[in-house]
Amino acid sequence: MPKTALILGANGRFGRHITTALTRHGWHTKLFKRATDTLPDAAIGADLIVNAWNIPYARWVAEIPAQTEAVISAAKASGAAVLIPGNIYVYGADLPATLTAHTPHKATNPLGQIRREMEGTYRKAGVKTVILRAGDYIDTEASGNWFDRIIAAKIRKGRFTYPGPLDQPHLWGYLPDLAEAGASLADRLDELPHFTDVLHEGFTLTGAELAQAIERATGTTLRQSQMAWWPIQLVRPFWSEAKHIVEMRYLWQRPHSAECAAALSTQNATPLEEALRTACAPLLQKSTSTQTSRWSVA
Image 1 (cartoon, one colour):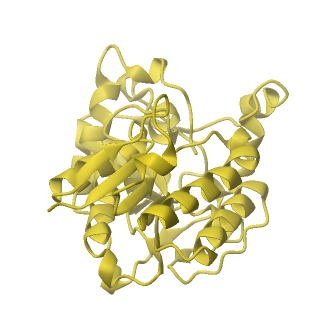
Image 2 (tube, one colour):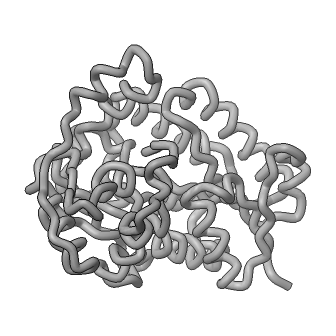
């Protein structure tokens, strides 16, 4: 009998891909519906709860603690484990050039502290928890993240706009590969420690290397430039997300890569150029959803 995974945020970036990956691995997936479901009832019979809810930055302080407690309560009542897509915010602005699952969590900035506290709550809760940590996402469709909203948004016009110095290495996670790693970990839940922190190795590329890889993948020629941050600074009084986006600017200024443990390998299965060809396909169309998608980099 297949195991059951309850997916919270199934329409979001990680939620879409983990649903596909778990189904491919033989899991029964149950998609949580906010309009009609309650979390305690929906979790009954679940072996795994995937918390892929994506809360806008401005609501993290108000909503993440309560959401965390609700998921933990549902997991305890149902006996389910919890899988969470993590980020690298917990390491802080002084993050080392090479990240591992053992890199200390030293974040003191607001968003980093919230994630540290959230993960600490799961660690202490007595619920089997897997944090699958990755860098910025590369999606298979335009979903309003850094890659499709800013960096590659104008590749059809031959423009590549990067948020930081073009020579600084930056960590990326291709979502189909990240989801495949999540499904593989879910298959091994019984073997894993009570709290598992896994870092997805992903792709590490400088801005210039990313632009060159996109050119090879798409057959385009790109003019590289750095993004101006002053418009985001300018709208801070009017856009609640702006100050948080500026807060995380250091990730574009400090070089970082990932090194995962061999025993919990999350190597990419997809070649870089194939991943970029897929990600760029909707951006090369005449009518592209990046014009209407909500920018959300959380």
